[in-house]
Image: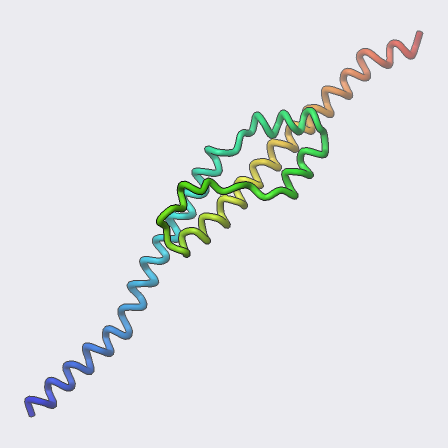
Length: 132
């Protein structure tokens, strides 16, 4: 009877390990992915220069938003050293999405401002010369 109790206890322990350990690992991975998302969003805000992309949109017009749309932002490599594959995957995806969105937004704003300035310049300086 003592052996049956030990076998049942061991079976219950193994069943609990099989049921609980994957949940613990999943919870740790979920927390890691959430941290990667927060870090990537913060780094994308810090690394993308809206002045640079807005200036490019102002100077180059519609070519800057097109380039911002078609190019893939570089990921800062130093922040990924020693991280797990799940962290790297989540960080890469979120960083590239947010950096690209910020680049496009700044380039479109610069393009719109550049178009408004060039239109105003045309009507203020060129059109009066045509009336002469």
